[in-house]
Length: 607
Ligand code: AGP
Image 1: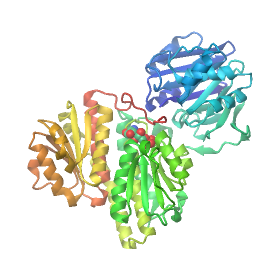
Image 2: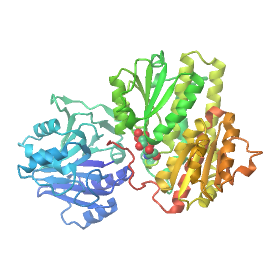
Image 3: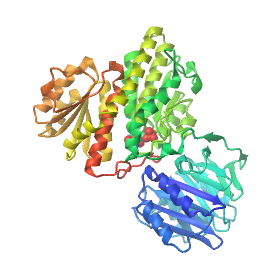
Image 4: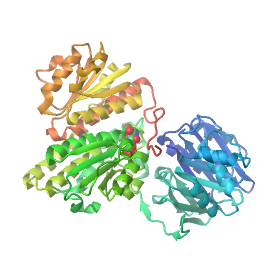
């Protein structure tokens, strides 16, 4: 999704803006631009393509001066990838950047046309700029308040008004904005990674609020009441290097290797003497009391963590768990009540569909608990309770450590439910914790197989398609492994419940087609291996990824990635790291950008 950066203060803004956009590149984008304001007015510099191209244009510009400015990276929603469609957009008195989607922009454009407004670009954003200009009466606040009543959709704006030099007015209805102030000036951004080098203290701009940024500082107002509010300050608990590559070739590689620490930081604070303890999270036991069903809502990788969670909770707690795609849940008129626990899983805490699902669950009276990685994010703030994962910033578009810690979150919730419902003795809880911590420890061992897994990746690097197989809990792992490969290497990869393959899809299994079979469940291992042998019999190139003993199955596969054996409940962590490494190396062999795959954004904050 789009990246936003704004600054006004005592120092030249151009470099702050371009550097901030570079920090936001990981979010995924296709064009970039800045606007600089000084005593001579406002200068816009923008381009289709990468921030590096923008920097060249800025360096070549003779008038790229000013200590006030806004910058933007655009992930195209309305209109192609062109310089004209890049932000900032200008309409007479207004220079504006936007994150989100204006759903009624066509009606607004039509109503403005009769007033003589004609858009240059194909974007909804320019229409918003024209609307705000058409409403402008010299008072930025009143104008934005009026525009807020007309605009429909999701937006975060940063606006410079021609007759208010040195000032930036920001409005948020749902797209995230964070802000901070230092002795050098006031800063705003779409996420904290862009501001880290200036401050580790920040505040989240609440929805339906306006931020006024001046050389003298920053002020926060409720858009309806115009009441000035004291921002609720937060502190980043990771250091600036956490948002750097740290010597790895890609952020994804670093984040795969971050997993042992991310898992420990997420799990250890919640396990004490063989019991799970959420008191430091402010999660009361009564959240879990009376729960007779669980619904998990999420998207993409986060949904796959829900698949793992469902298997664990149903197996151990014996209550029904359904996993819903948030984009479906929000429109399905779900059956919820006070005994339903809705768990929203989201690394960013800003995914539009997941946020909408949460709001629906809250409206319908369900208990809501979110598993979120970004502190203070919208989903975290609007849930009854939040179980933060402590993975640190995840920069690569392809989620890795976030998946592992999301799964860990479900293991913790399972243990809490078992305790509340009296389903496990103290000894059984202690054993669960011991097996859990042992499983987390295997990830370090799997990372040592990186070079070996790379040799396997090389064998399948040129494939057009691939199929990931798994049964039970392993289907969730297979799904995640498949998405990893698909989203960064562009291999046409699908995950299948192993038993389902012969009901159609096996027709696509021909000579050399890679089959990646995931096996951590002893109870169904023979069945899975039978399915694997059916593919081998048709010429598939089979890669086993397992912690189980493969003695007797040697003829069923071509390559074996053996991870340390653990209790069936906990095979998730070692296998996941192996699948991530496999996808990473295939992508590197194919020469693609591992961290910023085409068409994708790190946090999908639009529908
Ligand atoms: C996974 O690698 C992708 N980045 C994507 O599927 C992601 O998991 C999904 O968009 C959900 O994002 P969230 O966890 O921030 O809500």
